[in-house]
Image (cartoon, rainbow, N blue to C red; front, side):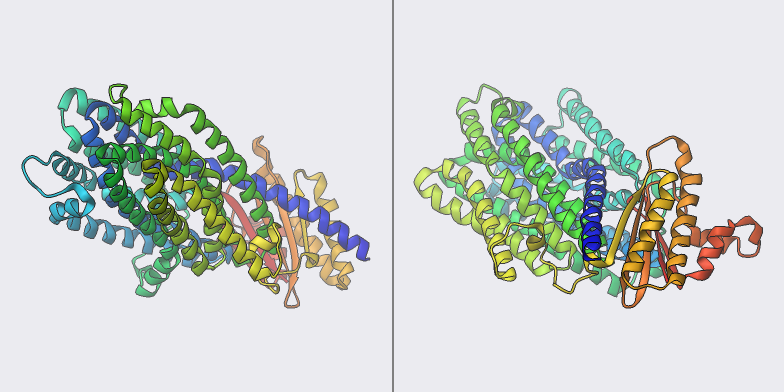
Length: 602
């Protein structure tokens, strides 16, 4: 019997790994593109500014970036809070709570946008001085340019924030294609508007910021069309907006805003150090490095966002096996993907710098190329740090997430920048990125080893789950069905699994009935579109109850709601589904990440 249980554990673990890898891969591209949504317009602006408006304008753009990052932090806070909160409600099958999360996020985005815009418009001059642009005197061109860019950008702040909260909801609803279209439309419109600004309207740096604002509104309009459709799975309800829910969403997103605010302070400090070591040329070089870095960071952020969303769902489900598989998958993606990005950045550094600075600035180009290459060395540890802090946020370890954010985005990089700049000048600042990120990952590993009381690089160790978390692997049965012929085989395996756990024949027969009826219905109505589909079955025992989770990637179908709608007319509802629902203790359905998820308890 022990040998059979061990075989089930190994086979089921492999199937779980395959399912996680497939789902992770499906979500990753859109999450990377979504992460780029925030930085793509900033990148395009920096390229156009560097080419057409000169070094002073590039320095002004760099000085204004902390304000842009603050708005990005607020949007990211809401986005992360949505992913954690909705991940939990969807994992528990609570549609009402998911709608409440959607309503609260829209309300908070509106409030933050309005207040933020008013503050920047009313206090532009002191904000520019605080950022390091100097005093508002007639011959201070950098001050004027910084103020103009902030004015143009702040017009689009509401769309900037709303686009960020739109992303997780569209990802959860499976609207990945629409996300890609929105991001592409934003990029194309921003390039076109920037070209018109330079060649036709001559709007200067204000026009660059305003072009970004308009492109954010275009992307938002494309995405928002889904939320007005009848089949939208999220509903805005005023009665769902309550102070308690607002505070909960903000609390879930606090680790992310700590992360972003730490980075704002780092940018501010590095600008100060660079002004003292290399003056405006060094600040302009850092603006280019930041722009390149923001695109590179999108890969790690995309991996982290997928990890956050899946971790919050699996954690609410108590799915220990899937979480361990998630840690393996996200770590592999972080290392391999960013190794490729690192090599690409090092090899193409001169070409990348040419996008921002013309060859008529030889000294600035030389400094920037070196900075880009040294910065690229930080990408692999940065991606690991970002991925793990998102993952720890998803499993309710907010304190650890905040600690990693402060270490990664401020403390260690700032210490190394301050120390190394004393010996190597501007080059020391560029070296500080790799030193700070690597030190942060070493500290994370030390925390993991101290917690587990042993040195281990296993996924189990880095998952940091309590020993009594969820259901033990030996009490879980996982299987995948890809055709109707496999249904009977899987149901027999599930029955044998239950028999090995001492279950009686009556309960085993009910479990077989549930698996075969629901799976046959999915194959009959969902597999007929000619696309590749699969059904993932998870059977587990907890608190003396058996639960079956049936997950498929077919078209949306809620059997619970379907039976409620046809309760008065029994002939309209399938007999098998009606029989199953009448025999189980509880049934919950939720559609998340474009997948149907049905949980039956008996």
